[in-house]
Image (cartoon, rainbow, N blue to C red; front, top):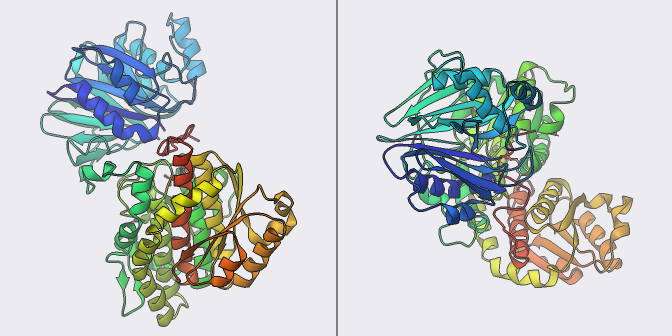
Length: 606
Ligand code: M6R
């Protein structure tokens, strides 16, 4: 949540910062602001478009910092927008995170005469640095000293009016990436705004402080000791963070699903042996043989992907599995031992609750693996081993292609773990062979895009939806409902079809449609009975059914046909039309699809 971006070099900083902020917009869009050394500070409510409009002519300087806010402390007003400054308007700061002890620090600073202009926790940081500057004339040392007093999380960048050739960035619990260009350097919450300038980046670790100038960057700890951090080359290119001709990132990312599956399986299948292989698991493969229990953690869509994983691991690999929200796991007293595998799923690799769950499980002796999309992210670094999705950057707040990729990798991990245990060669081969067919099958579904768009006319007026499924596709019912809520602001509930009679059936009437996932699989007959019960109460039903299943077409109001696949892989196909359904519903309603209200892409606060 919140995005920071900073530039120091020889070019027009405002131009670079505004362009970079536009790329970061998915991280927050309540308010935005910029400080350019020598030019001053501008901020406004809303995102970059608004900011761009009010930047004065001749707002010129060659270094600066900028911010997009997702409000935590204080209303999303101009006053609360970043950058924040101190009493003398010398220290400027942009911040992603939360200063937990802001009240007590604020009281101390007030006693020393500081006056605050906003109701944010971030402003405290500027005043703290101002206070430290009285003791040390060194700006980087003052920033470090100030941050030592802070409890909470920050990914922050600081500037001082008197030192235009210096940005000090720091990280504690919120991501910070340094981009290393030629005679210019960048700092950002993630690599997306940096990519058009350089692919060479350094990821800060918690407790790191980066001292950046036009021609150099030096990374040290809060205590001042040198911290050698390796430089990485990003594989993504700039085109991947552009819309590429689509109206929205969400649609572009849904349409990328076939390629995403190909990228997830590339080089990971050994057809002859019916085996899956992962470079990232080599070092721990013997430990994985000893795993007796798996706990999957994730939040939102990643959690639902985990629920599919639970079915896969238990049925096909024979390993007892549980799935937990990251936010719950860390506050329970989870029973975890050194035969437990903690599998964290996260697109961003920065979700605070998932990260804390990993830390808690590791403390208790579990082996922690990650399925993560963002290379170099905190979760990727903190897990003992892991698998990258290689799905490319996901910009739309609603997770689509990353979810498809997570399911694909879970299927591969099922074969990996299953073949270490009792899964037969034939079953391993069968799953893997079918996985290679999934991209073509998703393509067939995507070709129904216009049909799904037209369907919206029949469903867009409904205010409530039920999504039902069983077994592998129950989590897809949850995910389908989440997508609709998230981008269309329509109430939707995912429910186990078998549970309908235990309560929700009471809500069904002609104004309460149900989306039912009913494939010709091990729960087909049961699903058909549940749909009949809904039909009998006049509930409109839109079904996802197996291609050629005319019985379902005869039973329900609308059907979308999905190519036949193995039951274990069917969720990968089922989710795609539900993503499109939510997308077109949101477009029909005129919502800002890529940036749903109140949400941010990467949830780095609890
Ligand atoms: O980056 P993560 O995968 O850890 O994010 C987890 C959730 O915040 C995320 O899946 C969220 O639920 C999406 N907006 C859903 O579309």
